[in-house]
Image 1 (cartoon, rainbow, N blue to C red):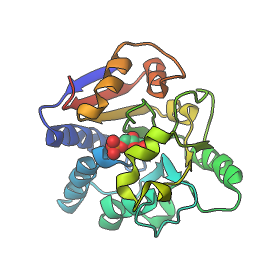
Image 2: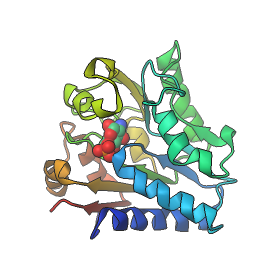
Image 3: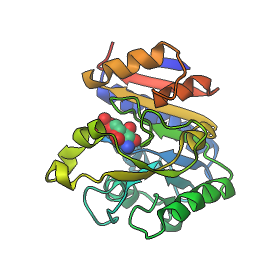
Image 4: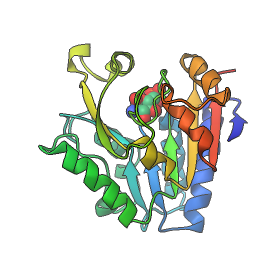
Length: 237
Ligand SMILES: N[C@@H]1[C@@H](O)[C@H](O)[C@@H](COP(=O)(O)O)O[C@@H]1O
């Protein structure tokens, strides 16, 4: 695992965006694994600026997002699909048919989850995966206790995760109880991983990740067994 300390949130975002830009330039048909969350907003801003400056193009790129809430449609402002439209997709030239966000509003969620991995594999696998981390160490929406062998699946959100994400909803009662997420195995299959960590609320998570232990009680610890992970962090010791 490679660790990069950034002097600020902006620098963290720039370093991460530079890695993605470089990979995109080298491989215009790249398969991107994308993440949501407040931490990633600066990163997307950098990518959009680079696109507007004609430094990069997403014309032939494909993307797969990590996760989506169950029972929320893409037009809902709290949905991850909406977030991605606002942060990236509405501003760049990625073709709509090449954009994939797990479907949280479908009747057969399990079938959608299974199909998601089929689509990722058919695309040749994820070349580079962006990740954030939850205060409890979740990646995607893989909560503590999730078997590392799982691919995309439907999970029940931890109460602490619902609390952490309630700022995006009118009230805690509106925060979905379930989500559809790439599994740890899906994430581990990505060829390269970039993990962003920002802010004091993630101190415990970063300490635990740094300890090097590998345990299903701390989902991000699976990354200790991945051969190409770059962690870019700021605002934590
Ligand atoms: N499912 C997402 C994760 O993919 C993300 O990493 C996490 C951290 O979000 P933030 O960056 O807002 O702290 O939030 C959500 O739970």
